[in-house]
Image (cartoon, rainbow, N blue to C red; front, top):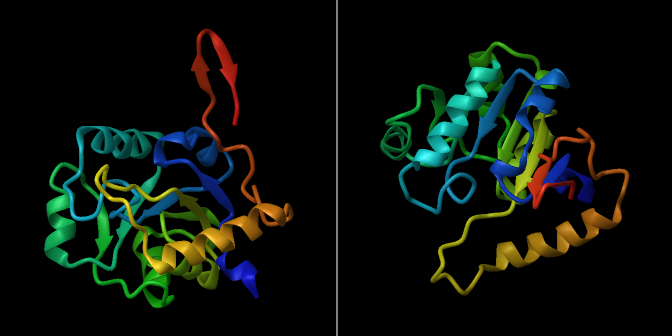
Length: 186
């Protein structure tokens, strides 16, 4: 029962994923959530995020932004990014995950969803039969409290980390970091 809430992978951020490795594993499309996944809630895209999306598209990935936000919010976010999107996606309902596959022209096993919420992004992807990568949610520096839903997510993620058969189901997509001339992996 809890497995429906478990991501295939759990990463620190969208910037710690090795997208070249992901592409080599046969994935052709990425569906991104926006708020608290790529930027703090309600903020415009940053130069760093724009560069990341352009890099990902340069590898050969098709991209689509799947968000429960309004059309206006997504258009504002995408002002420097050329990508497909679905607004008011009603995540975790499956219909727009499946519509996204059609729009991208890929099969379920060729797509991955990247988001920050277990109860929307991961659950919707899993219900749709699409691989999911959960990233730690972005918090504003002045944000001290987290909601009840985030507390429940913490419990689910603790149980997830204990269930080794559910962790790292995509496998070896963590970007190697170079620190003081030493290559390290998480």
